[in-house]
Amino acid sequence: MIGKIATPLLAVLVFLGLWELLVWVNDWPNYKMASPSDLPPAFWKYKELFFTMGWQTLWRTVAGLMLAVVFGTLIGMVIGFSKIARDALYPLLIGFNAIPKATLVPVISLIFIGQHDFNTVLMAFMISFFPIAVSVGIGLSTLEPEYRDILRALGATRFTIFRKIALPKTLPEFFGALKVSATLAFIGTNLVEIVSPHGRGLGALFKSGETNGDYPLMFAVLIALAFLGIVLYYAVVFLERVFAGWADREGT
Amino acid sequence: MTENLIEIKGVTHAYKTASGPLPVLDGLNVSVPEGTFAAVVGPSGCGKSTLTKLVAGLMKPDSGEVWLHGELVKGPRKTVGMAFQNPVLLEWRTILDNVILPLEIVAPKMSKAKCVARAMELLDMVGLVGFEHKRPSELSGGMRQRASLCRSLVHKPDVLIMDEPFGALDAFTREDLWQTMRDLRRAEPFTAVLITHDLRESVFLGDQVIVLSGRPARSQYVMNVDLPEDRTLDVLFTPKAADMLHRLRDQIKIAQGRDVEAHS
Ligand SMILES: Nc1ncnc2c1ncn2[C@@H]1O[C@H](COP(=O)(O)OP(=O)(O)O)[C@@H](O)[C@H]1O
Ligand SMILES: [Mg+2]
Image 1 (cartoon, each protein chain N blue to C red):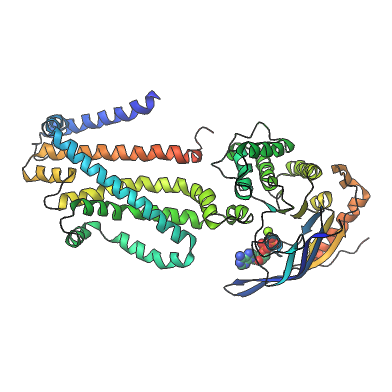
Image 2: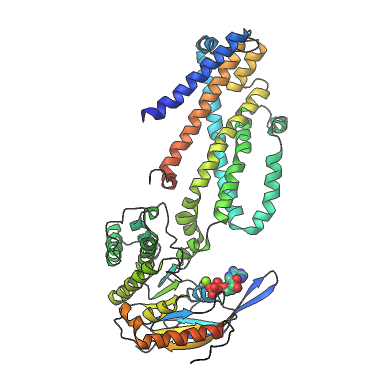
């Protein structure tokens, strides 16, 4: 138990130590690379901004991710249950996913002018629903027929079969995809925050650091983003334990 | 009492495949009297699993009729229980909750306590008491198949349809399960259709053994198993059983399209 917390913590400390050493040995100036010891002052100086902007980034990411869960699951159900829908939608989905999302930022900001919150959530959603849709789709379409038949033979409806068998059976794949999607959603949120003029959130804070030549601030934002990413990831891991813990064969 | 619980009349069926229709059943007739056990054997790929799906109402035949209890089968019905070679237990449920599953569909208003009592009654009969709170992954293959049998019987079906349920088990475990099957039937009579590729299994459990021809399958040979009701495994070593096994083996060879060896 202690090892579970101490080991990663130690790894982080070693990482920070090496980083500090690297900057010190090379005698890099701040504009080249800030060192970890520059970061606490930067955090302290802008602590209110970090809280408000961090909160902005977090809620938009989570909102986008939740949209991705809802729509991704719906699309996954459609392509999982219907072969025709699968054939029709796969090329579209893959094509859409292949578009670099940065190119969509000007597009959506022109469609929804000034709707910064909305645009950010939308981008987080667009970038993160694909893994969920594919994993749910594959999970459902590869369900062994016998699993379906044990309930179908009793006259159960398709929805009951989905709820009692197909859905729980795909949960491990779903959570695997959700971990990837959570990270992607962060990228989507930040993309819009950085690129939009007069944006808010940690991405905008990063941009203001860049504009003002405040290099420790820029690095501090990166660390804050990494921190939020870790928090969100472990939130997903926690949910996975609760809802799909049965799939974990460790120790049995 | 002489009424046939299952009546399959002239059933013909073909699957639509990329290379045209594949005829699987060809004018198949099968009658299973109420409370009896029909074992079905036949060459691999001849249409045995298709037959189980038709009886369960999961598919409709191209032509011909399937009757259960004097009613024409048009779709799935709650009075059927199914078991497969793969026990298909749900990993996220305990053994107890797996056994209860059909009751959630068939009797959604039944109280939890009653469901548990019913499931435990069956788990007791198959010797799984003490394992009810375990996950399927913690049980051996034989125990999982026992749990699967409990699940297929928990809602007291009229008809139990089994598609090679013991096919993946080792010989000793398989014989244990034959005896469990016999005991379950004695405790709660039901009509059964058992698909198997084990002739000894068909003779030990069956009241009649139906040999299907090669694809497209017809009923090629029907043998009444005239052995005592209460069989023990020893019965398989009697001359009578040996003779029946011999006849079945000859029929399988014919079904496979090979000549019967000349009897000495
Ligand atoms: N859904 C299906 N579509 C097309 N062909 C099928 C389908 N299911 C089974 N078949 C074919 O029909 C034949 C009979 O199958 P099955 O009833 O499973 O045989 P058995 O259980 O006796 O081995 C096999 O040749 C099989 O390949
Ligand atoms: Mg089969």
